[in-house]
Length: 117
Image (tube, rainbow, N blue to C red; front, side, top):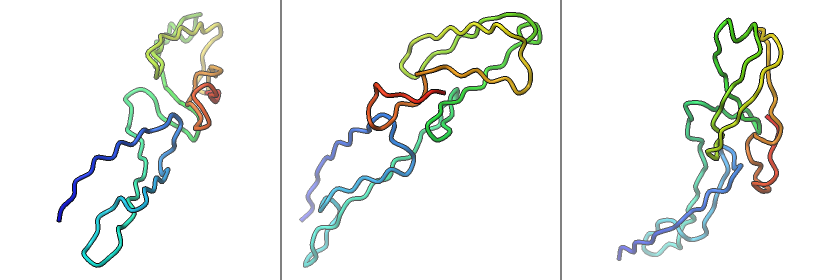
């Protein structure tokens, strides 16, 4: 007898690729055998702007030569839909990196606790 069941999985903020979820006795079963476990693994959907580096959220933003040599402003949309305006007050070079505190990936312990990016 085929039994159909809908299982709703709430993905938590900050879960990493490979996070394993096990639902006891929710897998398929064969007659005369006990119910199997259903095992799911989290994978990360690629984003066109951001990439994840462990707990850091990384974005590469291209600017013109004029912007690199003078003060400028960079506007980014966050994962939560806010617009982030970042003033760049120094000359940009190839190794330049700007760290924005408390705007990185949420940690799995809670959305309020975010790692710096």
